Every structure is written in C-alpha cells, then in structure tokens.
Length: 228
Image (cartoon, rainbow, N blue to C red; front, side, top):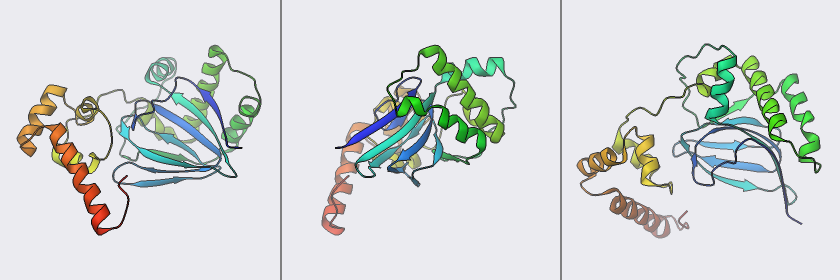
C-alpha cells in the first residue's frame, strides 16, 4: 500500500513550479530529485534542507518501499517579519544563489525532529499557537548553527531587474504564469511584455509555445527521449 506521511507546520506550499515562501524539509523516507533550470539537487533520507522562495523548481519524488515521509515547515514572510521584530540579526547580502540549501545535522536539530515524532507517526494535531512556537524554535536552531541564513530568511526585497534573454532561455521549461516570469525578472507585467517584444521580436506566449515545441521535437528526433 502506498503511503505518504507528512508533518506540516505553517501555510501550505503552492503546487506550482514556483516557491513563493521559504520552507524547511527533513526527509525521513524516499528520495527527491530537483532541477532549478541550471543545477540539479538530490535529497535523500536524513537530509535537512531549505527550499528558497522566489525560485523555480521541478522535482520528482521516489518512494522507499512504497513510502515517502517528510517534515515540511513553511517559513513564510509574515512569520519571518514577526520573528525578526523580536530578535536582532545582522542581515547582509547573500552570495549563494542555490535554490536548495542543505543544513548540517547537529544535536539541537536532531532533538527538534524527534520532538515532532508524535505528529508525523501518530494522529496528534498541532494547534496554530503551538505550531508557531515550534516554527520559532526551529528558526532559532537554524540561525544558531548557521548565522548566515539570516541573509536568506530576512531579505524581504523583490527581485532585481535582470537580463531577460538569459533568464528566459534558462527557465522557459517551467510552466508558470507570465506574472511569475515578470516578477522573477524584476519587472511589472506590462514592462515584461514590452521588454520581451524588444528582445525576442514576438510576444511571450508565442515564444514560449515555439520554444517548448522545438525542444520536444529535438528530444524525440535526435535523443529518442520523451518530452518533459
């Protein structure tokens, strides 16, 4: 019998190929392979990692003996702003652009995961107040072990305007809205469409359709692969 068990703290994660909020994950059973357009990641049982907001991700889950078990804790912007108002951290620009940040295990983190066992192996439910206390505990542990994470968690700015041609050629495979593409390139939707026309000589919808069809054709004819 297939089974997927989760312990979830905080708001649900969007199912689209876009990460709108940071989230922490600990993988108990099964594996995950992910791709962000330029780099591939492999997550295995026992791995702790942060998936970073404002990143495009495609991932595949693989069950272990028909099981996939994980703990997911969403660190949304509202929660992070409330946290940083109570605690003082030195926030510097982050030089790490990875979509996933792996966290080294330590005794505090190991004990924290063990404290959640009744919720992912049993039927107990966390009420919102206690869930937020557990989220704050996790954040304190992460920042104690890796202080540089403050620059990731407490950067509340919007993406800077970036090179449109490079970004689209890297990320056209992701099935997200034009609003998302515009946001991630640091533009309003109207500016994105205008810049896109200037850069590619056509509108985004037509360009994306042709680009994806061309890649599918190439994979089928020359690499004997199925299109993704």
